[in-house]
Length: 281
Image 1 (cartoon, rainbow, N blue to C red):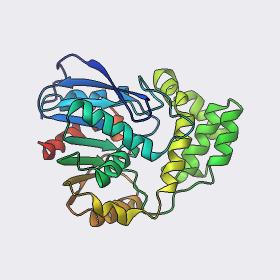
Image 2: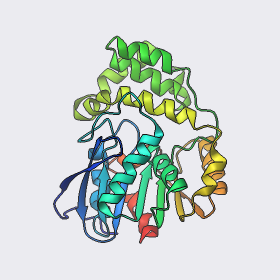
Image 3: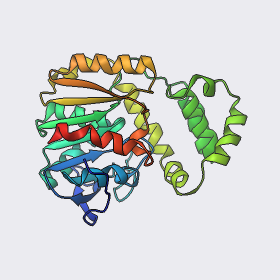
Image 4: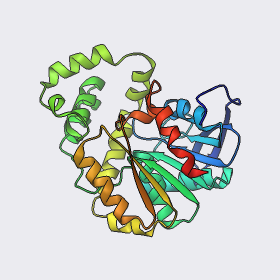
């Protein structure tokens, strides 16, 4: 797959979900239609480097999930089922039969495919299908810091408590890590993340509620490429193997040198991830 990112212009579109919420998505490229659904604390902007690479082979539709970008708010009745309705609306508007999801976006795609045979082929990068209990102790202090307007403090509770941080980071004093984050997290990227912290909590509450449902994903009939970063924690990689064994038609591929966030890290991850996706053609 070519690394040249000079590709067709970006077009803005909107689909209307079942509850009337506007769901924005951005389209570029030429070829079979492919929907890209992103993860927590990210918007379509974070997936444009990957989308521009894929656009050499696909017409790519990058979704802004509800609560971000050009889409409407999550709303007081937010749930994973709402995300499924949103994806169904975008699929109906685009006619796409291919899908790629990262993290929570991978959960959304697999949950949709479990009940609705909309996709001929699916690729997911470390999808958020819980195979083990999801940590929740961080949620109460996160909510308190957020209510107090302490966004950095809330974010530290999230990264130390949600299970994704390196072990050394979980042992650092809260005040110290908060000070570090104030220095290293700045600018546009932080502003996008800061604006999504409330959505982050709602999405992780939904994620925790999915534990125990792994056997239900045996209803996904489409072929699935399950991508896992070689730098991700061994216990997480073991959980993705459990998901592979549950899905009726799944291939598990470890992408060496990448971690959970790599699809949104433009200096390295998107190129490597894009090279793994001819599966969708």
